Image 1 (cartoon, helix red, strand yellow):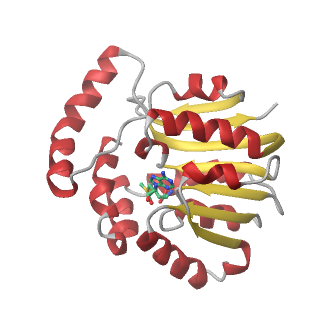
Image 2: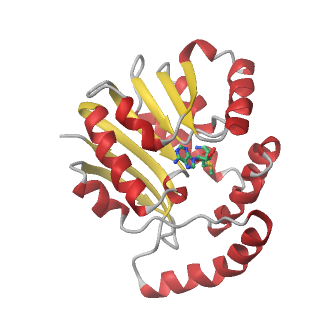
Length: 217
Ligand SMILES: C[S@@+](CC[C@H](N)C(=O)[O-])C[C@H]1O[C@@H](n2cnc3c(N)ncnc32)[C@H](O)[C@@H]1O
């Protein structure tokens, strides 16, 4: 899944993001999001960090949850709004142009689930630590944190394979967008450090993509 680096190019043309990501991931991301949101129960309050065009948001709303999606990219949010309206789910989803840095404005213990798909890899180390700390604060006791994202493999050989696949894509993406994504380092350790217990972790074969379920004690 090293091709996720190319999502930065897709984000620069939000209208092509959804079809592009589907081609890049051969539909795998849909299966990941379906699995991740299977932990959400009817009527729960869910916060989607970096909701983009609403892919994960829609899965959660289909579970009859009340979802708030936040993102800093207004064009991605415009497309999310359209998709949500086409799916007749506007009554279950509120979208806000807002960054993770503003999570301090959310009420403590007000969500059952805080989730994120492919957003942590766009955050700095400090933002990741801050976001996880805030996620813990705003979650109710026994609330869940659900994350799907690109991670740095633990083993040296897998890190090397990952780097070899990714390097040309990083250069290509940087030439077009002047930005890049970072694979998230030591996510399980960061989750523990923020005070969560880990419920489950699923890694792909080359260990560069994680699906993580954490729980607030
Ligand atoms: C690769 S997209 C994924 C979007 C969506 N979650 C999905 O799976 O289709 C990452 C999203 O994170 C958003 N993002 C990046 N930094 C952010 C921040 N600091 N706060 C909130 N959203 C952010 C981007 O604008 C982008 O829409």
